[in-house]
Length: 422
Image (tube, rainbow, N blue to C red):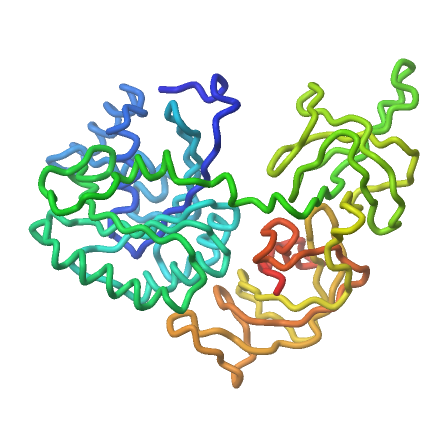
């Protein structure tokens, strides 16, 4: 098993897996880890014992990812399970999300930072409403890459005609969505066909295996490297004798490439200065880009606090209190028209009021519903809000970090919804 500390300079790919119930997501991830020799011997022995105990003849690789005891006992997958693994080429974080319709919010949580989504389809059932919903969420969250894994090919005699039919059906549907890179792979997670090793039973498929694609798909340009955005998370003032005058600004680069010596502007004050130094984990760096966490010192002593943003003078984000949002509501309590909520945007928290609920989206047909303005759990709506103070934001399709919002209940502090700025 690779030690991720040895590979700090290796690129990290975050991917999410989705599909309907029992289409083999957990088996697929288990197979990926097992065939790439990324499971410890004792882990394998323990799932072997658990499989026997359940009266199963083969080792059930799904048990590897079903890490929550409750789901092992009930045989269902709940919430979002994160898994970390690495190969010599890349590090990976998997967000394994449940297929049930009532867990749409979990898929949104798992997918919000993903570079890639794997959507599983059962070869016997073809494209279901669930498949369409997961693809719609992937397109809404602007996940740059989508792999449609057509699983259980062993149960349809490895039929090329069935694979082609599902591929055509999905291609027709996805034409309405904004996903620019879609790949199709016929697999059998149970037997390992085209997961890590190429299948000898589908000689008609000439494409890459799933692992090859995960290791080699180009993600370098998934981040916005043009518009410089650095939301201030923390002001560092050591107050010690030797660092008497030190003042650094820590945070994560949300867009663009910052270099030492760059001329920058601070929002909201619009004061200008230059970058004096940048440090990452205590070491000086000459340039910083997303998603690096760095601390920056500036040439001038400017009053800056958490929630402010460092940008370029001639490339500023939108600054406004009136914002239009595509919202995924994640709570049983209905969204209130005229309701007051707390918004978390980058490193800033402000109050907002819902001025208008424009329409709801039928997630299966993608049609607008203008007659029903009751927005409940797992529903999507386009709304208009006004914030107590101006936010510095970009459209979500330009920058997923500066274009996203979280809605919080001011009285209970619960997360209520996630929004994408239109």
